[in-house]
Length: 603
Image 1: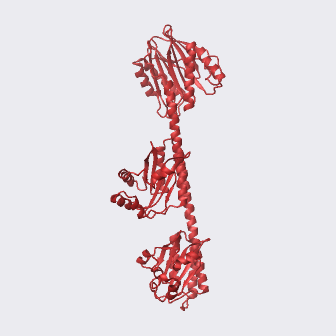
Image 2: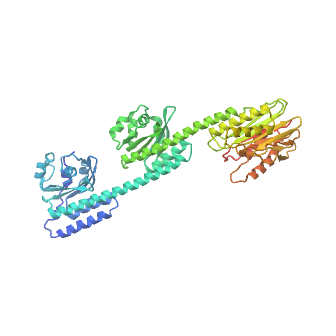
Image 3: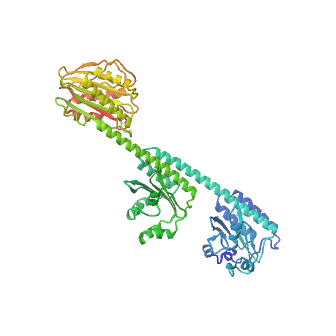
């Protein structure tokens, strides 16, 4: 690869001489070089620097050829040239910094390298013998912007010309200006890229915190990633010990369906030594700075797979684990294609940050789901299964969880007593989740225990006050507890901070079983005096919780009025059917509270 390097950078004869040749315009040439140096201070892109440092400098100093090479690890990559043929550019696109040639020596040592003619070149770099015309000279100027050269500016001249001290001083000053401009522009690009990455992380965090549905939020995060960090993004998570692709996104939405098809045809090997399966197994990120054709060949399943992989023009890749509490929950893969910038360690740090945030979001969602399952199981275990088979009574119930993600604390029951009476109650524990469900189970069990001793409403609710005080229970619980007597057709009732039942006469007229308000359970004992209500045969009693009547941005009295208006239908037909119709007509599906109702028909 070294063969022809200097010849290429020397260029073909252009009929010009070095800028100190006796043309009478030496001062003008130096002035032009000074102007170009000043222009570099205002350059806003690497392309501008290349234009000034290569094309315009070559004209100003009458160089036969000029090249600008920037260092990338141990390579000197050709980023701009003047006076070279296309085949020469392609052959010498990259030089090894350790190579034996003038440009590599300048980059390696940080010193300007001057070669007067072909004879000196052959003596110093034997590998390049015969590659440069006899009358060609080369000047290699290191670009310093710190401790290590950023690259090299190479100028070649005809007629064996080598700059003197004054000219070399001007050229070195210009090379330093190039280096400073490149460093400044790169720093600006890094700062801009970092700002984009931080904005992405902030936006991704908002998405991840917006919902406990991590499947939906991770899909949205993948869409954000292809706008800011990648051309492709894939999210894989563990499901039953299998790594399953949750989301695939591409900057071109039309490519997404094709990507899923490719995934179907060539599913990842869970034992693969690299890629998402390996990162998921080990929890260690992978940075593939540059994806080579050799990598594609090694990873292809067959010729068709290789062809498709090459068509994707994969450029650079990152795969990071989704981590939470020391566990790897899945992976995020980011891929750049075409001529995009290669990923670096800085990009890896951003991707790993995203992986940690996404992992925590998944973990929180899974923990919440497990907690919710426990609460649901607890609630289902204590709520009565069937109340429509109580001898001598017609009952109907309805329970549905609210729109919130947690289980609520609504509870109800109906207990036939030995003397033919029926004890009914409904309550609402403030709060949601396992603690509310556990408190609900506790209160319901306590009510059943106390009524088995003495079902009188005043006695039962009074005993609950004693329990709350002795056990220092601070959770607030509203309760409506009553006893229906079919012999006297009376309802004896205590409402502890709970909405009073609605009483429906056989003709459909309604009234609330209002009584002087009593304290909600949990804020201290109260005088638990029962009220007594006379009922006609065929009447209905409806007990309910807040969720049935609440609506957003509406006064609760409006909901109570609506309930009173519609409850008259309970006596029009089969009680379960009419109760379902009532709930459907009243319930706001956007509501966050549980909806619970218990209706009893008086015999």
